[in-house]
Amino acid sequence: MESQIRFKRKQINGIEIFYREAGNPKNQPIILLHGFPTSSHMYRKVLQALSNNYYLIAPDYPGFGESEFPSSERFPYTFDAIAILMEAFIMSFNFKDFTLMIQDYGAPIGFRIATAHPDKVKAIINQNGNAYEEGLGDAWKGIRNLWTKNSEDNRNALLAAFSLEGLKWQYTHGTRNPENINPDSWQLDYLRLSRPGAHQVNLDLFYDYQNNVKLYPKWQEYLRKYQPAMLIVWGKNDAFFPESGAKAYTKDLKVVDYNVYDTGHFALEEDGGDIIEKIRSFMGQLE
Image (cartoon, rainbow, N blue to C red; front, side):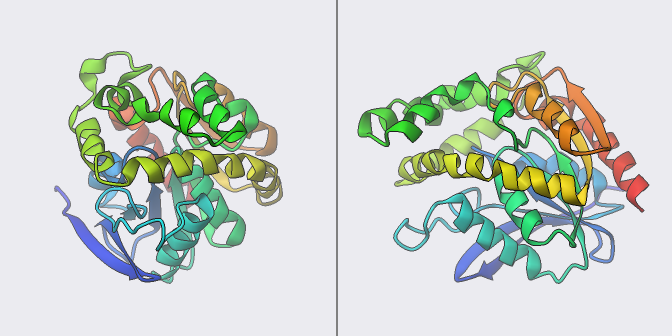
């Protein structure tokens, strides 16, 4: 039976957060944290397929997807600020515990929440969500230049990432067959990234990403200490987060359900069916 996905909104710390919700609130919750340049839209297959067994919530960060896009005067576009807002969003549901699914930006946001609430994070489903220096691939070169000098030249050099071709590349690079990838995804992202101020905000987040790297040792210590159950479902051809980032988790976690796919950054696009079955099996073992 096909389950209904609900499209809802909540006011959190004065900012309207849009989220997709599916499943029965009495079931075990899974919080799905999206990456760049996308939104909760990237989890549409997971929401549809797993809603009969789990309670799924996929929020959009401020400035992303359907959530409010406050000015940078009203809201500081840093990972600390986004994580504080997402933490408040998650806590508003009063869950006893929950599983986090993280991808790309979802990792630095999710690990901030996990380290603040280790007793509440039951497990982590990790699709190309990095927490190790060795997991930063060659595609970071331009952003590393920005970290060295936050100049107009270095910011302008990154603007191609927001073009239609640049966004298409993020979805199709490393895939077995680009014809498997739905172009609606990058078209939606392009529409949102074309809003006034969107380039500035996202460049600010690129610059701030260096503060995530500084927190990697803290997150690794959390993994070693608390040993959260982790499912890895990783696209190994990701130019930003190659397979070395997935392997690094096995240094700190004693048990990892480790799965690597011959695809790119958005592994759910090409291998969603298999990944969803891995999630179903993994979640079943937690119960």
